Length: 123
Image 1: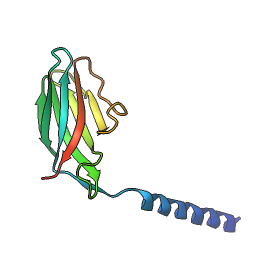
Image 2 (image 1 turned 45 degrees about the vertical axis):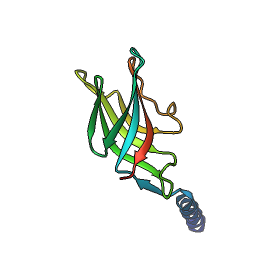
Image 3 (image 1 turned 180 degrees about the horizontal axis):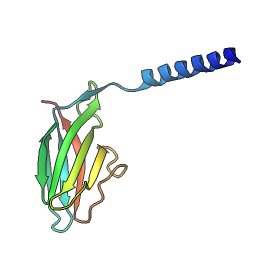
């Protein structure tokens, strides 16, 4: 019985090591470029925001926690940790990671505004 448990533990540890080794290396950007769309007016703008900063778009406050991209590929697929709240309303509209190549995968759900990640800033 103990031998089986030990064997299972060794297999799990080997599987975990393989999984961790297969994960791509990433770099953190100094900020991000986001695109904001006001669905009522049809106006879109690019928003440059530094890591840890807050940007305002319409009635939204957007906080960028971090922006990551594949190491060695600055123009590669960016993903950003964002927290978005609406002025005058409690709570957040969005909190989580947005991915540049798949904006619908983790999208902000708001009646008036859309926000998505374009790329990370590296300098």
